[in-house]
Amino acid sequence: MKRHIPNAMTSANLFCGTLALIYIGLGQIEPVLSLLGLGLFFDFFDGFAARALGVSSPMGKELDSLADMVSFGVVPGFIMARLIMEAQGEPFLPESPFDLFAETPFFLIAFLIPVFSALRLAKFNLDERQSDSFFGLPTPANTLLIASFWMITAFSPESIGTEILQNPWILIGLTLLSSFLLVSEIKLIALKFKSFAWKGNEFRYILILASLILFAVFQHISIPIIILLYFILSLVQNMLDKKS
Image 1 (tube, rainbow, N blue to C red):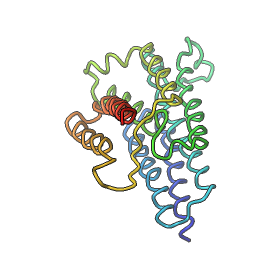
Image 2: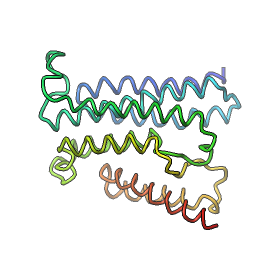
Image 3: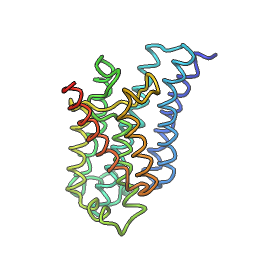
């Protein structure tokens, strides 16, 4: 029975992702955020459970990527598509399918995110370098970043961030940047602890502590700042590693 537990958790991640797509269509951000949170929980602990129970398998690895493709590939693509449509003053779900292309379909650019997420996940499965570090932005982090854009526009409508994110060209630029970062060769910190000692994990602990403080103070607005900090700390660590 225990060998099915990790795959059940991975499948639960996939289930959360499919449900999130429905609520994106309905424009209900709270259920989407709850489902993404659950998906992240299952995505983190399925691998932990497999290692703890000693039941890791090639099938589990493939299933994990398939689940991530939906929850952290298709879902952020749909969120960005909705944001671009709304920035153009158009409904995300028109009455007629033909109305979807009545205006300039810039929203289609958002679906580069699922495409590049698939490339990133395939690359991750084949790249043996990514056991201790990540090369390119992980799909869950990218999903949190894009979800934070929706949170900013929904929960802080009068903020400067909302004003910026209501420009469709900025959203298109962010889509292209996101797609590039997913498959880039930038070496990033992986939150994988071989031990909980400070030595060797300094940047991981700094990132976690700074993220908790930033989120406690700025809440959803802090997420883009945290992602930026993630890159900065990773670049600093890379420079120090080269010098040592």
